[in-house]
Length: 175
Image (cartoon, rainbow, N blue to C red; front, top):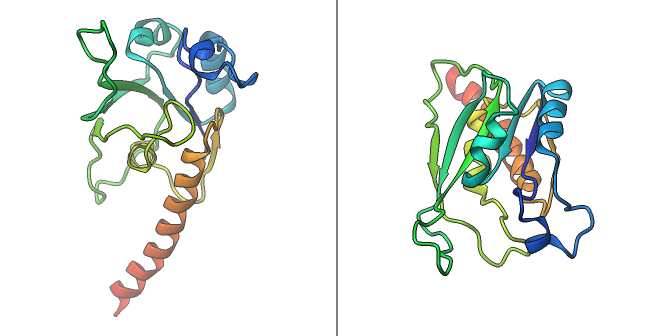
């Protein structure tokens, strides 16, 4: 399966957080969603809560919204209702076997700190997303906005773990 994960600069945040990087300009989310639907079998898109309604309007009706809940989140001055969760829109995840554990549509995992860029996703987030999308190590994952490279690194580790665990389980089942 050809899969894409997108964590573009959130609407209105590119200049504030990424002005040093000319590749991180504001993103046309309508065009991005159209490209994802055209070019990939399955995709996930991270976004901010203030932009959820706007971006959902660009999505096909069969998307699903997941929640990354942040028990430790950055609190901002003059913001009295904290932004302590992030929506993740997914489209066409692979149907998981009923023999596999059920994946929740939310994850509670703290943000990362001092990882070089604002918004670097923790490995727990990536692993949860791979499971929610029903990914397999033989799938092709494109990280369209790689930033720190954290998601691609987590993908390599996750695939490596799955490739080494599966043969061991098969061997144990035959003993």
